[in-house]
Amino acid sequence: MRILIAEDEKDLNRIITSRLKAEHYSVDSCFDGREALEYLESAEYDALVLDIMMPVLDGLSVLKQMRRRNDSTPVILLTAKDSIEDRVSGLDAGANDYLVKPFAFEELLARIRVLLRKPAETPKTCYKVADLEVHMDTQQVKRGGKDIKLSGKEFALLRYMVQNEGIVLSRDRLEQHLWNFDYAGGSNVIDVYIRYLRKKIDEGYDRKLIHTVRGSGYVLRAEP
Image 1 (cartoon, rainbow, N blue to C red):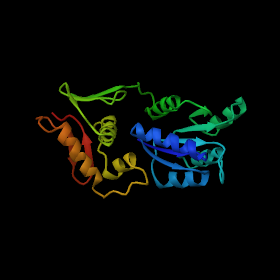
Image 2 (tube, rainbow, N blue to C red; image 1 turned 90 degrees about the horizontal axis):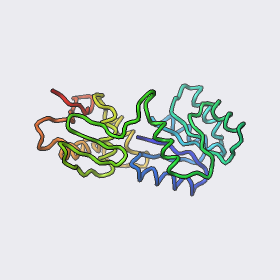
Image 3 (tube, helix red, strand yellow; image 1 turned 120 degrees about the vertical axis):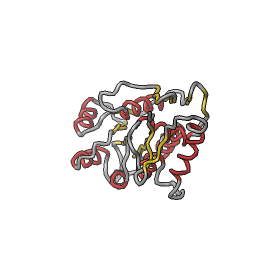
Image 4 (cartoon, one colour; image 1 turned 180 degrees about the vertical axis):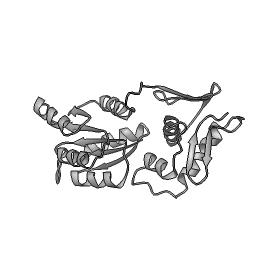
């Protein structure tokens, strides 16, 4: 999952970014509203953490421009203001949630998880495909009851694929959701990580779960 942080307080921006990366999210960060709009025009994000009081262009103006151009990216507003009027203004502008500074990172993380749920989706802590189990809360992965150890990036890739079970995901889409703009790897990075996953998830099992769709990308599904 890819998240954009727009916060002009550099220390807070750095802390949020590093903590989210530690949770295996792909994160881009910026420090003013104009820059935030440029990021949003350049990539697809699963969520935006948006400070209201920012230079160049404030957060509410960013939010209004997003909604006018039909950008439905879920938004959490951050602000030091906690009056009812401020909250109403933010929600009326199109925010999905509102968090007053100072806040606990665990609360921000929980609110992000809520935003990333699909509409009307029952929260799931474990996804199962055939005999594969992916536990979102503990990041534990099992196949046939056997524990599988994954790196952070391998787990992030598997998490995104299992949440989109049966959907063909292009290399570009996978890369956009798993790496930020600072990444300078080669064009075959998705192929490399798919190979790592296949070695750990499929090798030694008759029933393969990770499939290549020629010319389109990859899909995780349990075929008969």
